[in-house]
Length: 546
Image (cartoon, rainbow, N blue to C red; front, side):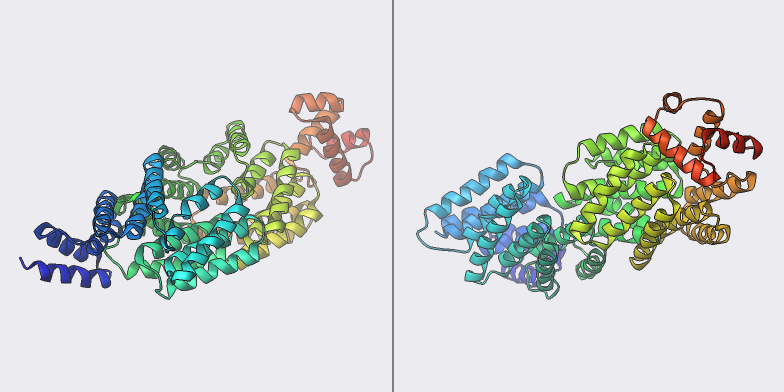
């Protein structure tokens, strides 16, 4: 074996991002003659890109000691930081802090400024971030960027700009924050960053865009991440998260079979490395959501359980599955529990639409109304098109449950327009179902039929069997009898009124508040064109409503 040839082949393969070739050549060269610190770092990074975290850390640890032997404390400190960073992502917080402390101690002995001081500020930034102190996180990121710019370290500058952007968005300064995020991504797509940092920035940014409901940006950067991954066919490290992001985008875009295939591939091919391990739970949840939407209840439940086992909260999907099964009380208990445990506004936004839907289903309209207002306030503060669509749909659903079809129409038309612009066919179709119901309540049966038919066609094309049945249930109810636009709950209240029950007795029988009973009565009087309980009772008997 020619060690020099193997070493050169390994370096050349690394430069081409042929990670498997680089790893094997550098490993063989190292076996023949221990590598210098610089080449040990190349070996370690190649192992990382192949999802071999233990080999990555051991290579960095060797490089750390080699730099110490060479008297280069700053480079040794940088290796220490990367070891700690990987341990942190693997869930080993105490060893990670130990390596960070070692790196910091080495730099304290140095009497000169160096770029590594910027890297060793990142643990402080993460502490602020995890503690919810976004102003302190922003200030620390500014300090880190200054170090990176002073030494011309593009990796460090990009990490700092990314975190500044994230902190600003979390403070409600969305436009300024997203501008910094986009600037960071320009550096990535231009190929200015090292492979590991490029992967970290890609995945962090796309996950962030998803978490703040920037659907268009998430789509654009996911497409860029896909191209980046395709240029490195033997890369493992970031592939799992890339597939999960793609599956989420495809689900919203209506490409359900393709989304399911992407999510399945995570568990089948990409399990190596800390990032891929994190992706497994998200991939299981994504599959569960798709099976729920298709009405395959048993498979969906099994995958929600798998997602939970892997550390991914199965809500709100599992609660919506229970609602689909007709287990309304179970669904309500689950979504209420999830809401009670969630305090971060953007995290609550992921639960609020399901919460509204389930509360409407169990006739807790007051709770649904409160959640709808919370979602509207968040959407106004955040300025996200997707959040605005979610808020408008929730507002329309609550107005419909309140019997205010005209207000529902305004909100639901806005929701449909937004979902249509966002190219989210399933959500747009669900808005059209509610639009159809609102039109029917106002006596516009032709428009109601058109809206329901259009929605049903979309559901059928997507394979959304439960939603097809949902639309058909309205058609069957309309064929059965003329309810004079009364909702099922209003019919229940009318029957009890005709039976001579008081508001208090009706509230007790239906397990709702007297205030809700009074609101239902107002809606009943308006729809029937009567002004008293006696007149409503007479109308009910004459028109076979009880």
